[in-house]
Length: 201
Picture (cartoon, rainbow, N blue to C red):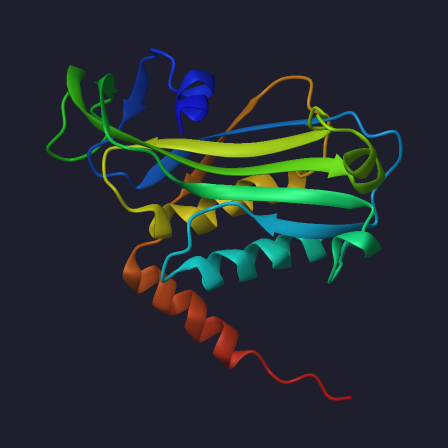
């Protein structure tokens, strides 16, 4: 956890909106692989919680959307992919309020903040087996600073933001705005899925 704080919890000023109708997530990805991986072995290095199966299932869907095959054993993979996710301990930070939301005004304030993240770290299987210490060859991550502890709500938006960039070699970090769906909007989206006509085979 100390390592994460050293990497990501540098003193910064970031923006909150009191209504949080949208979030700005930070995405970055570096790739130093000599060849494209086709088969990955997923290693979940996060603590197990009651939502872990849901998180891992969604992450697997994201990997499959890239045409990757998820191996059942490390020996049958091209790439060992370590995934971690969660929320750090709360910390105090200076934030800016942009005044766009009702009941909020322009200005700054020191508040309790949480660092939410999903991290993918890849190492070629052959390299990992033959070297005692090896630097990661692929590193993709997404992060978001929130004013509330609610990783499960932010998780799908963060994963959606990082998915197109998994395994890319970005020239610079990206900031991506994601619109948060309210509960009633989520229900509408689910109803749309249910009302889709079945495809005849």
